[in-house]
Length: 274
Image 1 (tube, one colour):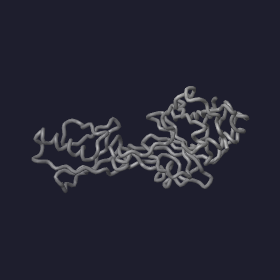
Image 2 (cartoon, rainbow, N blue to C red):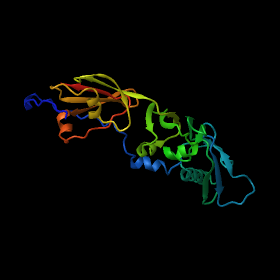
Image 3 (cartoon, rainbow, N blue to C red):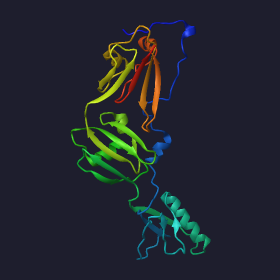
Image 4 (cartoon, rainbow, N blue to C red):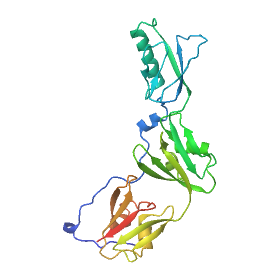
């Protein structure tokens, strides 16, 4: 077993807890996005006033700048970013304010979805631009439509609005539940050899081949174990924005079962310190 040499309590440095580097669970607010659609440019709306049976078309396309040109109104309405109920309420308010209708009742629906797009490429049968009908959709739903090829085992998701990159394991149910948002770029890739890096107070520092399910202590064992004075391991991981997030673990706590032996990921940087 790997054990760190115990030092007097006065010499022990306090444990530092860094922000977690695992993928966060989906929040309640994020789940609401899967049930919401906010209209945008080029969406086609079906707008009906007082259940009218007029032969005139009820279909109206939102302009590229996000405006709705409704013929009864003098000026276009800015509707981009609103749900259909808010669009209906806005039209009703304008009709009432201008005395163009008595107690107007407006119904609005989305006839054609066009504003929420993503791009899928790589090892799929159906690549190209896809349209979302919600503010967010689970990845497994998106990939079911794109039909991944058998050799696809991982994916990268580039989120343009935040400039984040996510590395996805297609065999992980947690990863596959990740929410895809408009503007995301998804690329499916084959399983290829990946690496992580070990340094510091180990017998054989350097590059190590990554495999799924590998833990921190297993990597250290593969590096020949630690020196007798080793006390702490620093696990550094890219947060997806180009910054390194570091978690610190005490060897004796992991070895005693007081602290979890965390899973590692490709690209991790492991530094054992005395």
